[in-house]
Length: 333
Image (cartoon, rainbow, N blue to C red; front, top):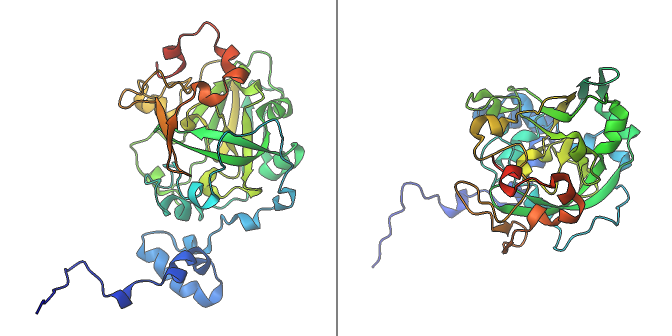
């Protein structure tokens, strides 16, 4: 007779959380007064503030949700399938909320960040410095949907339907002076809801930037939504940048300040490790990251590995921006 002793870490089958409960856990956390005490206890048990249980970042409450879905711009198409929302929505590099992009951690923690009130400071070399509410910005802009490839410096990729507006439209709105040469963007700082900002390993806030010429390129896009609705927080709501020809760390998330300056901004990752994460960061399969190859990438939607394309496949639109510049200068140095 075989006698099997359960290991100390094993649970009896009856103790496992039912799949239906697990899959609806976010709904349960915000399900009203009846569950408030239990949800608050759960949040406290995880070391999160009690308000985490109310999910103030729920995009269903976004004041601009009536603008979605926006009309798709047919000029921006894909050579691959759109990544399913449940995959891209739970595979996020957003170190303010956690460093494990491969599970629900980032999405769940990011949901506690309030989306309103939210203002964007416009300053530097502009006709008039001002602070503008995000809803006023969104409603002043011509929203459209674009299908873009996204390539991370870590050699994974996805393809998603962003909603937003061209950066050049915002530049016209901001009215920079002719002396402005760069656009510097800055992310929020709120360690009460973003636990990663309690770690002093990184020089918060997250900062990065582009040249004025890059910002004026038609591909440069400010994102407010995804999959036909306001973007969930883990995607960088309520305002993020999308630069599809550059590695993803250049696409600043949850922006609160946009400055027009005459000196090149130094991004957070460039401060931390400039040899690996430089200012230009254009996708180039022929130039490896110092610790791994960039010759191929893994599509998180299909699991397939495919060859990386120069400028992530957008060379026709952007190569002229870098005429005369060596490939190594465009990436990490």
